[in-house]
Amino acid sequence: GQCTQWCPTGAISERDDSDKVLKAIADPNITVVVQTAPATRIGLGEEFGMPVGTNVQGKQAAALRKLGFDSIFDTIFTADLTIMEEGTELVKRVKGELKKPIPQLTSCCPGWVKFVEYFYPDLIPNLSSAKSPQQMEGALIKTYFAEKKKADPKKIFSVSIMPCTAKKFECKRPEMVSASKNIKDSNVSPDVDVVLTTRELARMIKRAGIDFVSLPDDPYDQLMGSGSGAGVIFGTTGGVMEAAVRSAYYLITGQQPPSALWDLTPVRGMQGVKEAKVNIPGVGDVKVAVISGLANARTVMDQVRAGHAPWAFIEVMACPGGCQYGGGQPRSSAPPSDEVRNKRAESLYNIDANAKLRNSHDNPEIKQIYADFLTTPMSEKAEELLHTKYTSRAAELVAKKSGSQLS
Ligand code: SF4
Image (tube, rainbow, N blue to C red; front, top):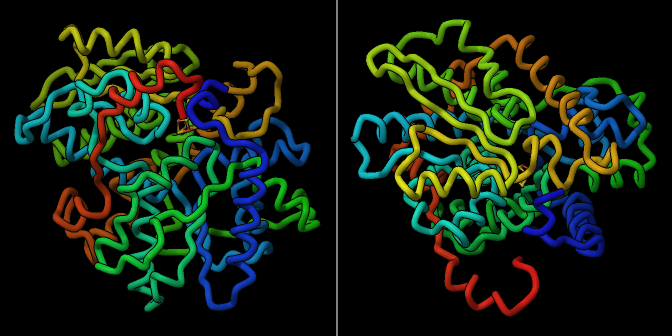
């Protein structure tokens, strides 16, 4: 995949990562908490011979329990939280309440964020300060979850199952230690200790001799284990935008978005650049764009840089098709094919269409975390735990020009 250029991760370090997780699970003094990304549920089954795009959410949770994880959370919970934070930031930018430019650019894809830091550092102020769902969940596991469970954050080991190899470097970024800063204890490890890809999880399941296909469906644990349909479609290109539009409508008007906004079809499909226009009462027409693949991002960012961008908000994913075809997903076709991408995306859209709650702001666990812990989006605590800063890497790029690949 395209993102492998950004995240050279060899099989040896993959094996090391699985071993670290098994060691933590074997230690009775450590609470091992795991989160699973939106896209792993529609990829993992393919490693066990199931049809492309099969939703194995329940079997995945059952397998994680059998492997010995203590608490199993869903990253779609923090996808919803990302929408609350990033949506609030967008509304503030559009209203001129934040001294930050539009278009706002999404920040949940670490391959894309690094690309901006290298090639478009002048557009760093456009990047949303919201962390990715993985990093939000990690920070909350060692603060909110620890507080609720009266657990020592130093004895929590936080693991992510991701469709993505770039998530391995994201969790190692030096600023991703919000839990230790928040509780002022530098002995707390990074917010996410280890990232395993979907393929690595499949190998662990196989090595443990678990008969995946026959597993019953297990639920996620409560507190940070449920998400809306909007959170699920984060796993495919355009999904973050659909989720954001639904909640931006609510945040601006105080009304639920009309059902016509639940299927924003212009941002669906595998084209590299997509556009849509949404009418929000009181604001008027808002133009948005969705990009997947970094070559397409370059074309659009050149327009933004030149001041010719008509959009208020732009979603960018480094991998063509988004996370459902990320570098850590099963390779069910070679070379990569849009047929597989479309089937996986369809499966995510079906989960959303059948979800009881389709809007991030309606998720009861989201309401609970604001009531009990964070107060409001972009509160001081939310800023501390859920937002971040970016660094220009332009100088690094110049230094590396004579070398080989970027890492
Ligand atoms: Fe990772 Fe998704 Fe970005 Fe690909 S699009 S690099 S899978 S976050």
